[in-house]
Image (cartoon, rainbow, N blue to C red):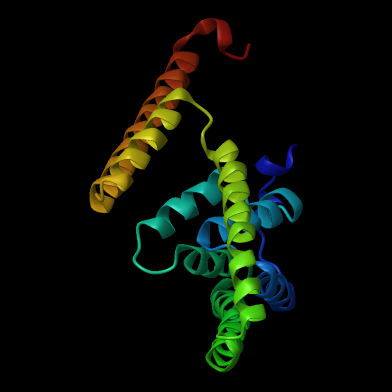
Length: 205
């Protein structure tokens, strides 16, 4: 049985595991939500096998429909999946607190030393690094999500709508498409099961 079809992957883990994983992410997950989500997919789907790729993408879609930082919401979802309600709280706190502490320290340093030319050059040099991290994350996540021509067409339509400032229309379009796809798959499975049940050739002797 493959990892993605193994029901044991859905069993909860310990709080120590959740705390360790999200503390690590809280300190190293640079680049914004797109980079964070790609890192979570790499870590929790491919390496740790906490959940299947399909369920992970469903969680990304659900988090994107809610206001607020989608990567933080996704971290909270993953903590709940792995260790229940306590895991939800621990994952959220461990993912947020390192970044909040670093931002506070950077804000203090910038307020006191931001006008120093050497520091200004350092901040300017960080910008292309962050852009590269986000581009790589989007590419990796895109390879996972865009597996069919309709999904690629939907992604292009979303990019165009986002450029013209229609975020609500983007969400409605994506949600409508996914509901339609799930409905089609459900009808197909039901029809296939009905045909197999009525075909004497596939019945057991």
